[in-house]
Amino acid sequence: MSGSAVARAASLVAGAPSGVGVASGLTLTPVDRERVLPVPGELASLFPSGGLRRGSTVVVRGSTTVLLALLAAATADGSWAAIVNMPGLGVLAAAELGVEVRRLALVPAPGVQVPAVTAALLDGVDLVVVAGGGVDTARARRLSARARHRGAVLLPFGPWPAPDLALTCTGRRWIGLDGGYGHLRAREFVVSASGRGAAARPVRTRLMLPGLNGAPGSTSTADGREMHRMSAVHAKG
Image 1: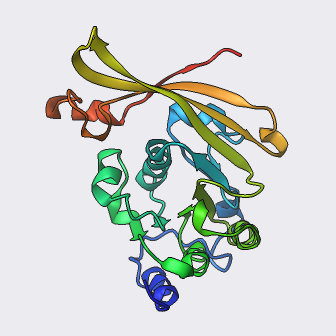
Image 2: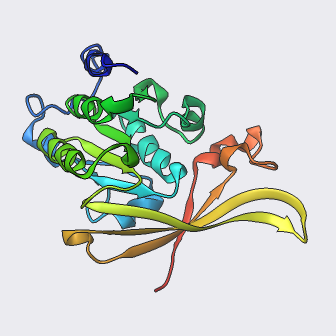
């Protein structure tokens, strides 16, 4: 995207349907600012507020699936979201994990305009995802400050300085093969959360996600509802 990226992002916000959840401090009421955006119930224990607190910066590392799960819960509740600088992430992947794509804007390749486009979107969109590798430390801190001022939620994917909360996904393994035969039925991995203030104490949850990414032997169409369910067991220690 050329230097017109900022103007395009601004026009996207200005031209959004009347139902858009505008994040601007000019239109948010005190009640809106205190509202916590919902997350999947299986992930709620990782958040001190039980969900995504407006004005916060929450980093996700290691799993686009968890990232999209957060967007799915928020957009299903009526919030609007945008994804910046992640050209490999498409609408189909988002839809398969439950994201309301009618409330999702994609800016896949803004080039050097990543910080400017992200800032513009924070002025008018409830949740903004940005690939952290495209933003230097000084600009990253300014974007976190902007999200805090506007009451939006900033969701960097990858490295980001001093987030309020960081979710790190590790220990992934596929389940379903027995002696080299069978079908891939589910994927299990661990999500660890740590941050500042109330989130200073690390928390860890073990997730089981069935039928991911169209893998061989994934959940059938008849059982498609189950693709969006995640069963979690809190890991000890």
